[in-house]
Length: 202
Image (cartoon, rainbow, N blue to C red; front, side, top):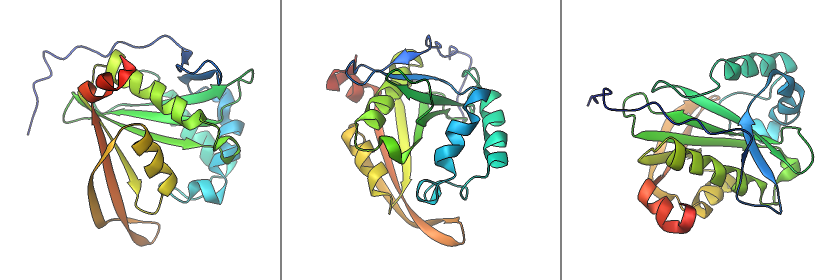
């Protein structure tokens, strides 16, 4: 299936830092900067964090290459691009996680959300606030019709977060992807713009 892109406007880029609607936590999103390398490496190098990412635990050199790739796409202008947003909170400007928004290459009305966070901020509501802010960007700025999320079937924390965000489990694909030497089962979640707005996020 192909889509006519002639009537699709470029996404309205938000002003950064983009603050989550959670004053008590003061969670902010912004494009990743070159200076974030060490903060990003601090959690991407942890085996527990990398377990469900598509790469093994990062060396510093690995993270430097990843951040360089992130720097090449600091806004969305063409379907197929992705935007990696650093997560800050409180008085610190250190990156404690990332939220990814990917614009679907085949269907410009659709996007995907992904995320990774430092174990140091787990259980504090920061991941939920950051992903809520990212979905507000996806639906209110980019005007996407649908946002999807995919996680390893064993990744109960990611599954719980997407459920809490109001995303529904639409399918489970058994042993559908070969990753790190094994077949993995994937859960596919999704939420529509009207469902997000109906949940009080307008």
